[in-house]
Length: 424
Image (cartoon, rainbow, N blue to C red; front, side, top):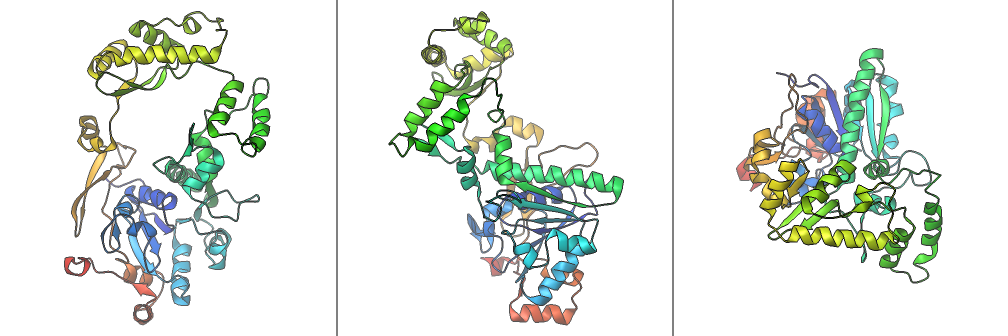
């Protein structure tokens, strides 16, 4: 069975995470994805290196693509890449602001000769406003949007770059939507996914402001403008926000709890689940059982309730709580390290991991394509060495064999051998 994107050509002018992951998702759907890399390759080829130009982080973002390794500013190379853009269904780009226009590879330039093109652009802060011209990375966006994990000792970066991955998935969804529009109308379009916007979507639970009850927020922001200048600590800031926040009982019903021999995660925020939980644990909570009841000090009450719930969990082993919660239909899971995922029977039963064969390294286990289709299945394919397809792609871009040979002779194009002798 063929993938849903079979026969589509994608020109990927992307690096790092968001655009490459989007390109990989399209490639796993059967698209012909041409990845344009500079002479040293995508930066992720050097992250967690296993072979020359073969990094661990490259394998999970760039599978199933063809690789064109070139000096993009060489006039003949640029002519070939511009020709490829004119013949592509989709162009993906995350150049630094203004660079695509300098190369004649921005949307306006491409769509003049390719009005059906779908141009997917990833930026840090969007395409307008005072920060639109600035570069940005995941951790910087975590700081700007407040997505970073806030602790009493200060903010800590999230371990995984979830903003980048969220942006990649949003871009893949946007590309698919634009393809549907083009199928109906015959016209392409430009779409932009900003890392900042992707981060805000991840904060969706917090980023709803109801004027009637959220007036405290503007006052708190005013407090923040002077807090650190006045010597306040992050502990002070967190406590001040807690003091102003309209409270709901949360921590006792949602989070991680130590058991007698491990840790579990529970998610019982809905009132029906809270009622089941306190019955299972033998805990009293009139705030849940008696609508309208309020404690005199909501902060002290929350702390006390959380302490009581934690003590009950700590008294018995994880297996006991898993059985109890399953019997009651309550959501729970044991805490595991990510390394354990490779050996999880649920993962194996659903094919959430896939195996690909690398020409030199052999078998590699990777996260499988994340959507399961009954009629047009996605397929994980191995990555290729740097510039593996350079000669072939330059020819598709309209260069003749002498022009291609000249580019290799001058060092403006590269094709790394995949033979074991040359790579090791």
